[in-house]
Length: 149
Image 1: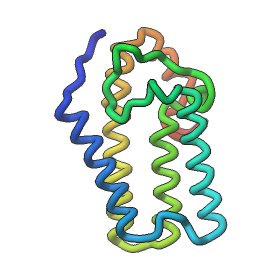
Image 2: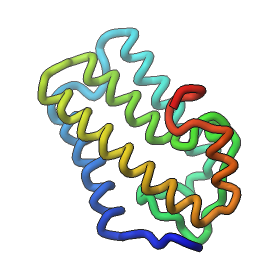
Image 3: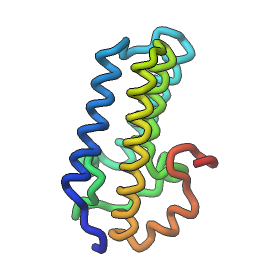
Image 4: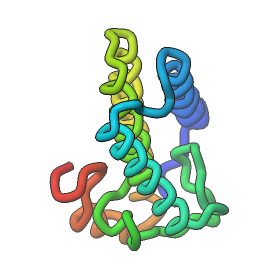
């Protein structure tokens, strides 16, 4: 296993992520009221559940660090995007911010977005070091948005 995780960085990224999610929950509703945004929020939840079922619950890790028992998953939503859990968080949070837009909620969303982008880049470095096939997987999948990014 090549790159070693930086535990301070890993925990900091997770604390910022959950802090931003808590801040969103404390500054407005956690269930979108507009029907279209509620559908987006439910789609985000469905993506998260699909990713968890595909990954297997016992392999889920909130830290970006690669655990010794990890395996490279390339089926389910991972066939198209490498970070469906992050995508689901961002999509669900966006629905909530659009449902009740305030400058503070937009700022929280930007913090969450930047944090998750940093976290996924860091995680990808660790995954590439742990799994020789990860580089090939990166060539046939996108990070967060199928066919786009």
